[in-house]
Length: 197
Image 1 (cartoon, one colour):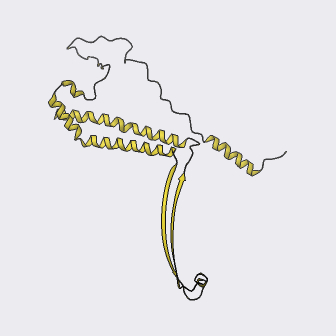
Image 2 (cartoon, rainbow, N blue to C red):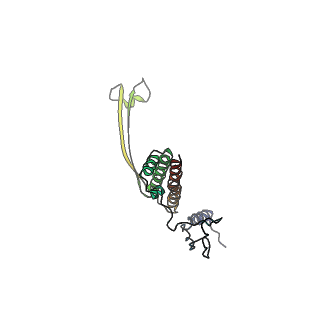
Image 3 (cartoon, rainbow, N blue to C red):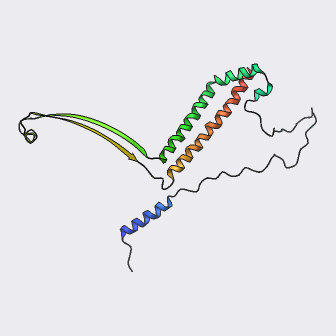
């Protein structure tokens, strides 16, 4: 019985391992539950003044700028100023902008990278008596000056064969979500503190 040579075994092992490096399936967000309320049976609201009323939510939710529901120009002005000058919101905006830029940088790996480099050098060699420098200075001169300039483009591209770049972009996009939500959540306490003080 003939055996496979060791070099062929290694190549077969590498091919099998490389095939196993394929990245998992694409993430699919699970469907939201079809429930419309916490309870399946309708609950009757208690009469005004009765203890332990059940909490109810507005169907569309409360507007992000909830203070405008009071229709008070003074309150609107105070909160507009508080939100515009809030260092907490400025920080949240900066964090969000940074996260968005990180996603853009991650997506750049899909495209070829072009680089242009330029270098220059200057060398002055003087002849010392004897030695191999006589061959260089056979023309009778005692020094040699060399100027060298090098300009060259470089084009690199790494194909996304195993999905590493795609997964990296997905990861950075997922990391972009918390700052986006934090910005909305930070506005609520800023507005609440401004109305109470």
